[in-house]
Length: 537
Length: 89
Image 1 (tube, one colour):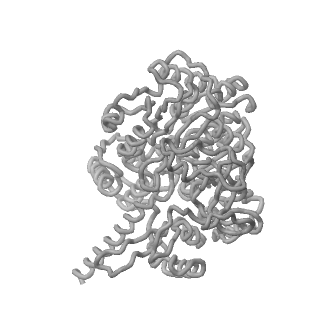
Image 2: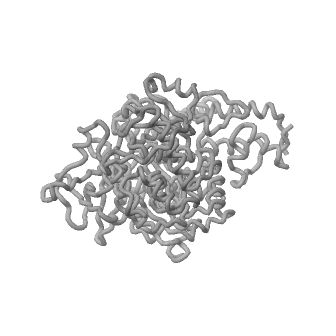
Image 3: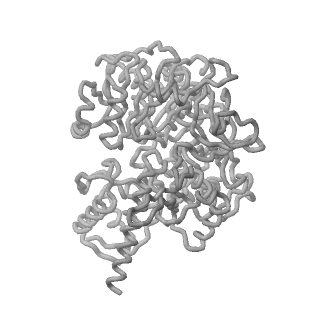
């Protein structure tokens, strides 16, 4: 089946031909078989065509997590247009920026007049279509596999949104490798945790149909309640879970997992951020039947490496109850090895290749690579390059990630070069500090922030580590000892501040500016408490 | 056993959520969907559970922290009314 598909536009037709009435997608409210999924996409596609959308047009999907959003994405690629997911919970200014930047011809949205009003002039001149709009069923458009299929927007380093454009070819290359790596079959049921604007969702959007596997969309409301999520996973017999580590930790710590039968889960895939050794160990203990796998890859290439961890029940003696994962050397889970059709290269600070064991920036060459950044040829040229000695048609993507290649060939993520900060002239990678600090058993999550010097505190910016849950003094002492042992002196945080939780963005990654604000609030609270103590004392 | 008048409980919940939890502005009606309105995220859910536990001196089992019991102020009040260890008039 997968051999006949060379563009996303024909994907649903292909699987519907083979298994028309098997379940395809559900969100708890709506349950569609493959024919239903295809027919709804064709009908919505027809509605878009009737409104004047043509191939190559960008069409936004601005919906809560639902079967509707999946149908909309497939409707758009079916007619040869380009899907632009827009976060339903994004601040309106940000959503408006995305709509303008992609210059979308149409928006598929359930937004009411208030929300559309808030988007203001960003909506002017653009077609607004409801997700259940119907039309004459659209035929599958003939599209060149190399043409654009979808755009994932990400915050650029300056905070302005930046669109990563993927083609039908790169999407299908990703889907095929994902199917092979995780042995997906039509018997699989994939939970959709990630919203469409987060590229992890391409696993459920494209790989699932190509495999004939069904998708269980976890709605936003349910997702906020881990005990509801675990209930859904158990009831729907989900077999594959893919999310950021945070969602897994939430499931394990608050999802009443011991009261659920989650034996259907055979894979727990995690990516987007490092998983702390303690949290990962807890998750593997709580889900002893599942293989866990680290998924690494910037959205610019979807995925490029993988690292499998066997089910805890097979090797119970290798996990201490205290939570230290002893099978991951140095307490850090490797990002593993490149998967098929993918080459990696490490380069040093002088852009020379690092051969064999060593550290360097990771460059990737793969058929899952983006076309480029939308309307930003300057950024694309800076990120995608040719290499001397490499064939002229082989493009390399500079990930901006620092990676270590170990003696055994496994790759370990060290940190992102674009989160480097300067402290007293030294370059510091916040993720590298966090990765090290996460090895401490008492750390479930952490974030390192730079506390900028205030005028009344002479001189220095400081590194402060926020740690959740709030550690006691003994644990803090152990953490400082660990950091001092492992990091250059200038990279050791001056202070560890306990917090209830680390602030996160909509995609589950650390929200670094919110973390800085949280620290500021902690300072204010201590100052008030001190003042109150003085005045009452 | 704690007793709270339900209309004052509604008001207290609205006040707490607005002041300490809400991610944005917007009116909080008894039936407002707290998550879909963008008012609370999972940290907010945890904060509401903490608040309830302290106000009623009860423990909320993780199994009870589900969308059916917490998706709106009405749902929260109904959940508490259904418990036998806190009286909501």
